[in-house]
Length: 350
Image (cartoon, rainbow, N blue to C red; front, side, top):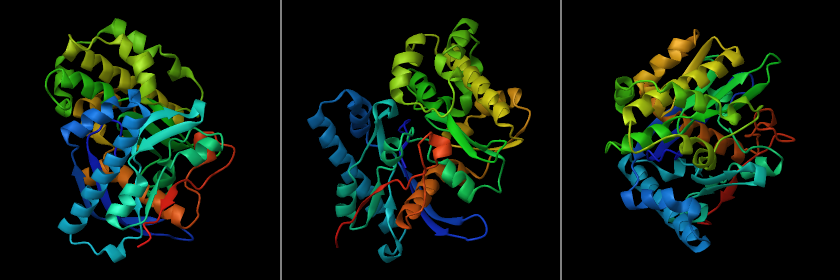
């Protein structure tokens, strides 16, 4: 798994057990996060504006990089390749435009399969999009398939915040709420930091109420579900409101408040009493404090391993569902005409 905030490549070796009468279960056997080389990270960041040839080369190179990481992981953890059914690979999202009929995640599945000699499942989103859905979120299948006993609802704080819950009719619903780590990390980078550790810079800043009102007035927040966000929306609507070259602490403080307000607003809408919080933003102590200031239910933070690897675990689950031809994208979540079995299988033929 690699998210939009480009924190690194999360690799999880997961054993899954499928049950007929209760929730499925998992064991996280090994895990590791591998940072992107700086040159590759720069290429990924500029990819949305790249030519077809440049993007195609990056797609190949990223697949080869993934393969080298997986091979090193298998060797260092002393894993038996015969025990690995497949690699489930989310890929790196470059463009997400379901309204135009596509979502693009690069990291060549063929290159990954051929260089690891293992089957690969990728391109999880486009089946759902061609069925009329958003192609996102996909994580709710795993939230309720693997973690349903942990909480009423599930909040992931990654590049964007997304929420999964059951409505009054017990249907699973989910949607993206707002950006989180993407703008926070972008601001922190102007201080020479990869991220604002524990939200310390934000805590030191002062609220800019004018900016806060502008952010909270963005049209997306009042649009109906299902809905999802991509970096294109940030570039067009969110970033133009922010000055990234000054008042860094004040901007961080204001954006954290904005995130906390929007998240708590949607938590109240969900009717949840308890919420399991994961993703890198769950480690931002100040952000968690501000969400708790608004939301009076229980925020449950699991062990750090689950906080950091829950999405990788769930994509392993989605891949295993694909291998069994079982639904791994829900129409009630994405707005598609019907549930789908997403993913493309690349067999290395060895």
